Length: 210
Image (tube, rainbow, N blue to C red):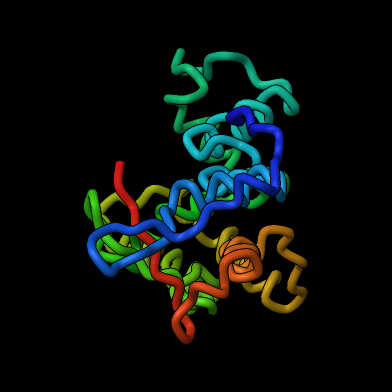
């Protein structure tokens, strides 16, 4: 995690003049202020660097289950299909991995972003495209159907798909609390709490350059 600076309320950013008659908040200054005041990282909201989310959790899982640094074929953990297949279907494996949580990439998905541009931050986050148990089941059923059509279907792959479908169906019957659910909205709420006075209707427009 990056080192957060000591918080100073007097450093709260204000809109800057971008060109004659046009003033906007600077995105990076705004986020740095919020991160220091509320002690979080918008690029790594889980507290685990996004590039390490899978590798770190996977490596810790291998250690927990006493797996060697190399599998039976001599492949290292990060290159081991053998270990990863085990991790993918384990109750305490991939399903418990912290999700990818980068607020900047969320904004890139909903804006046409380039250097020296304006971006719009909506007050309400639309999570309609989030991965759900239903969409996950559809994906695994498609994978299963595709494998079954092969001349020499992979029995282990079929077994894994069936297990993952069963697990998702079970979780639909007994939904579990997702501790990360709504993380984008939490950051958005802080943005509008501190800088909502500069918003126009349901959007806050800010300037970004790098």
